[in-house]
Structures are given as C-alpha cells and as structure tokens.
Image (cartoon, rainbow, N blue to C red; front, side, top):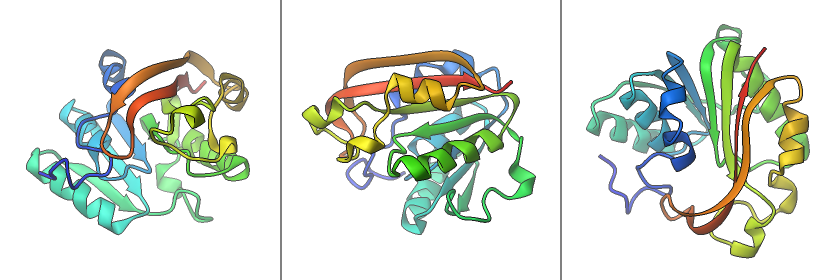
Length: 197
C-alpha cells in the first residue's frame, strides 16, 4: 500500500464521490480520468465496479498499481493523455456507466471544452459523469487547486457545459477537506452529477 506521506492526494477517496456510493451502485463500469495515484479508482473497485483509470504520469500509475495491489483489487490502468488527438479510442466510446473527474482543473477554457467532450464520449447512454472541483472563491483559501481563475468551475459554467444532459445534482459549497497534501483545509467546492440522455 502507498503510504499517505508518499501520496500527493492521499489514499482515501474523494468525499463527494464516496458520499454517492448508493448512486454508484446503479452502474457496473467506471472510468476515472486524470486518476493520479489511484485513490479514487481503487476505492471504486473496492465497491465492486469494473474500473478503468486513465493517467498521463507513469510515476502516478506505478503508485496507483501498488495501492491497488495492496488493497487486493483489479483496476485497468491506461497511460494516456485524454486530451491527445487520438483519444479516446473507438472501443471506449459509449462504454462506461460512470465517468469520474475529481480535481481535474488543470486546463483552461479551450482545453476544458475538449476534456468535457471526451468524458461525454466515454459515457454510455444513461451513464453519468461525476465532477468535483473548485469554485473561484477557492482562490481566497489557497488550500489546493489551480491558481488560474479561468480553470475554476461555476454553477453557470457547468450548467451550460452539460445543458444537453440531465443534471441530477449541481451543488456549490464549502467544506474542510483532507485529501493529501494537494487538497487540504477549508475549500470552496462544487459537485456535479449529470446523466447522458
């Protein structure tokens, strides 16, 4: 198992994700995008889902593999750039019951449009996207997340981005989080669950 001190984002799952366990049971397959060191993909596998994780860093994937092995679960790890021109491969289109994106705000508005389009491609009809991110108020807290305001989510931004989907939950809130060194302290958060028509 990867010690917490080694893991940038810790080894426990994102709280917004974990609190939707009952809803997650409505699916069989999940994809965790920009999965990092595996805390979310491994947890999803522990809940009985068939999990694929995509990550661009080979170092992070190696840590995620160790975490999965330590917890005795299977996760299919893919080393790939989700924003690459050849991604996603055709065999992954319309495949997943859940597409999970937790703190994936490492891109600006132009790339975010592509990022969301890719996530939509990956979800099957009736499948869901779950997003957890930071709102612009996070810049006041400085307890994690991007420093560029244009990378942060607002309710209006997400409502517009998923206007063609059924938004089942969209909530902006503040909370104390402790999700490794990268996300710790009082935080301005936003969560979305949207279902593909």
